[in-house]
Image (cartoon, rainbow, N blue to C red; front, side):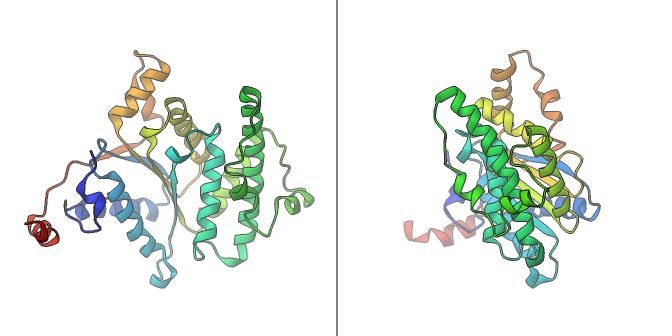
Length: 281
């Protein structure tokens, strides 16, 4: 089931009060430089994607330099698009690089090339590790994300390595630490908002790995808000299928998610609906 609200930009189900609630929470956490992970919880078809799209558009207005309130750095990671890929960290880094390329105002021009170069080097290292793991299992070396990761900026991974700041062959933990250091640099000036969509539609093992990777990446970094869009019931089903039926799902999810905002079916604005679709009557 897909909500009718996903086919129109009009707020037929009166979602704006919910969106305002989310924006207020984000603003409060941002003012305090607090880090957290929270989730919009709703069943499939309830309209989570519509809410996310409207929320992101409104947050981008806030983060725009045109408004003189340039305080958010927004990334959108649709993990379902990459659930075939062995290592979620490659897609996470690729998402950040792609967003930095698309949004000219996200990072100052003075630091953009270096940040992109740092992320590129980190992504290249994760990519090497991931491709090696896949080759061992299948004999195939995937290239789906190579262009995003390896063609990301003028300040190249080779230049960083020449400066002895990076080695693309760092072991996994060292590479993860470098990614965290880069994120700490980004979060000094702006609140990082990392939106994760379609988690409960991923392959079970991949969904669990995404949760664990997000936790490893963003823990101990201040001024970061990780925002999950989920169907909690479906996610709990995935966890039990992965770890066993006796798994305490609430306790497991509590390691990653601090609180939930429940999205219901909404209430139809009949006047707006009649005006929008009057030609059908």
